[in-house]
Length: 302
Image (cartoon, rainbow, N blue to C red; front, side, top):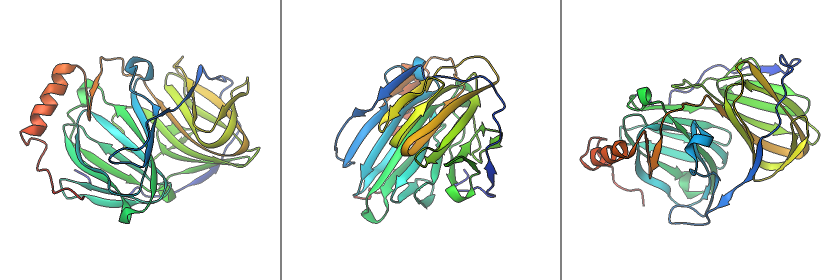
């Protein structure tokens, strides 16, 4: 298991003329499902709820959370990956194999749960933190891969600049720039900041299922200039191979995240912290966790 191997090398590029004439308008605009406070969080919302795994394939959910006490103490996962962006504050991570790290604002943690991992995600020094956590499904052939951690520092991820825009590339090929994340399945992940009036043509593989989420501010998207405001998503369905350009222009200073992924097109069954192909796979995951096959469960941080 590779614990927190920092990516190396950071590049800054200026967006060149788009290499594709294919422009994509959002298929749909969605809002968040507010969940409110809970035992682990001060506030939370489903940006993407796990309601229709076929429609969101390969993504399972996107959770936005604010917490200032412990946060998410020891818990298991199997069969998928968590991709966590620190929006504000600092996030502390531990796993049951001894891995530990602290992420700063703009950093991203990529956890491949694979065959099974137990970890904790905590508010560093019990100070307020805001996170966005994406769950990315894994194909059947990769679900039992060895667990892996990647701690991707913002400063080490390539930066592409457009007119009044800065886009940090963490995963996949976006606008001809390759992100540092090591992948089990083709996905792209980017974190963008726009000045008022800033613009960017975000190029993703045309056969990906993709969406953007407006963390703050508001933007106009696509050739139809559809307004997407703070707390809303815009979805782009998969099409033909090649490149698809997503035009974004900020109507006010804005912060966005972009995600896209190649649909897996396999049955998926999500229950609690497990994502397998069917119910029997989840039952087996629960049995393995309870019998200690995920490894020892450390003492709680509370």
